[in-house]
Image 1 (cartoon, rainbow, N blue to C red):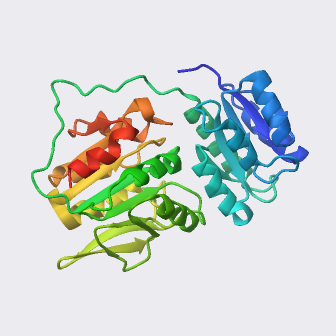
Image 2: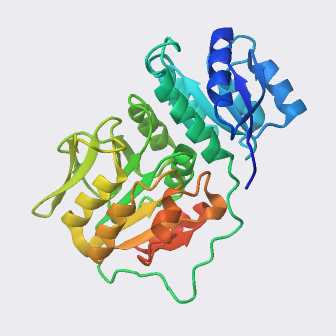
Length: 338
């Protein structure tokens, strides 16, 4: 755990550097140590100043954001938050996430727009979240052994947020092609990114990863990634499980892990396995209660491997019998339950 995170702002626009720095400095909990105008400047500043967090533009002269991430080589510090215009940089943003960026924040085309305050709240919250170092271990309490359902797993549901794309990349690469239950995934990510991310995950996974569409039949060997901006619901039709896309008002996150877990538990009961990976906030907690009440089982990513130990911590500490597993052992833990 650190005190005030030290932040480097990287953007080729002088106006953007000024606005982003002003947003961050408005929080007494953050220190902006410098700005950089391109990737080469950024790498020099990282070497000289050793910041905790970097906010990174993607399209820059000399060396772009992808080049910066490749030069950093996936090292755990500094944490990198991509600040991009998603309509232009979606494919680059997904590549950045695959290279270790913790999250993507959508930058409005005009930073002086009405979205500025909204961007500021999101940016400050994510800088503070990713800057916190995870705990060394998350031991399972001796008095609360993991609860494992006696029913065969019929559906694996995964929820994640900040730090989720790199975590999903590792997990999808490790899951076996012989997995006997379909997988449904909700990730908090800006609208427009999920199709490209599904295609990238499909390349690294033995399973077939697709962006969910309404009516999609969920079968073993398939991973359905929730579409950005739509909730992913699970519906049973006889022996068939189908994905349903829905817009539900008054939800903090769209798609929502709670919505996936709630409908999945209703569809398969004790055959539900809920998995909560790295992420800020508590999305998934209410849904985890639903899974536990239905007799299903729960896995959470251990603090030792989380980028942000928020969502997993809420579920793990809720007394639902969830088992904490480091990310590098999560694929095996899932396979053992199917």
